[in-house]
Image 1 (cartoon, rainbow, N blue to C red):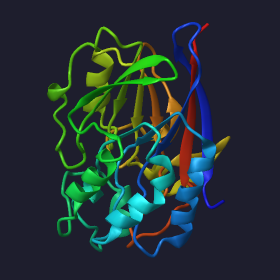
Image 2: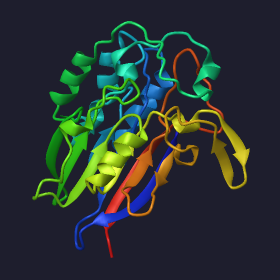
Image 3: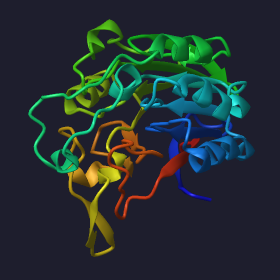
Length: 272
């Protein structure tokens, strides 16, 4: 297995409700040549999740859409939710790889347009819900879930006001989905009392330093504090946040140090 499966349990469901196993993945950055990564993605179907959530950056090549859909085929009959990231809209371009570790000044070096509409159509035709500035209601294992999402905050395409407000009255769980976990998104979702938020984008820091108890991220490539670069974290009186360190990298900077490719298996449990 060429990736880490990061597992966590969150006590967020009403008493007596059945567990919900969520497979959360992000930042595939797939190209047709990534055969090992494609094989790993196909293996996820054996995890038998109840819900699949992708937090974007599926693509890294003009010809990646059929590759992504074929790799995910075994998961596309399971309920799924997705949003897009910057690399779904624009192809990557060569740039200074150390710029990723520097302060984000909002400048973007983007390539040509990618066929993201074809990807969205392929996913929604199989029943996955597009949460880019949309809400959805779904029933998973008898729990009514309201999910909402934003478009990519890294490109400043986010407009949370389009999905803001209290959760639907029928909902027993409210979750948020976004690609890049900028604080403006998290704070807005917390004001609406969401229970769990899923994000990606950070690559777990991508290059991490050895540190007592593990390693320390050098960056999140957004304004999220570095200590929250990957995994499940929670601030007092806020939603649980799971940040996936993702599976891929830019094809022009295929380096990960102490931040291996990963997928998350998050089990939602009844609270005591």
